[in-house]
Amino acid sequence: MGASMRAAAGTLAARDEMVDRQVADMRALLRLMSNASAAESLKVLRAAFPDATLAARTAAVAGGRFQP
Image (cartoon, rainbow, N blue to C red):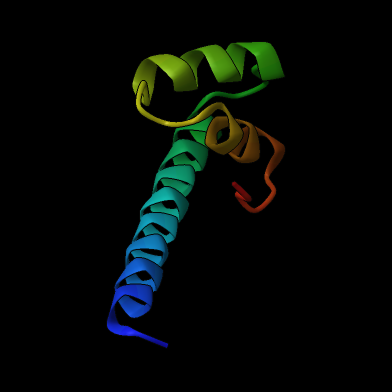
């Protein structure tokens, strides 16, 4: 693997790590909201995490692992 490929792989790994942390933070917020519907949860997450992708917010609500 060349240097540019290693750099790209490192960048992707760092991005995945950041998104995983963001999803964990979103789940922590959702735990504070008792009995919120999925729609309400997504609305709150959109306001609290405006830079997060819909896929990340959905993963947080669903409790699954983020997969881009």
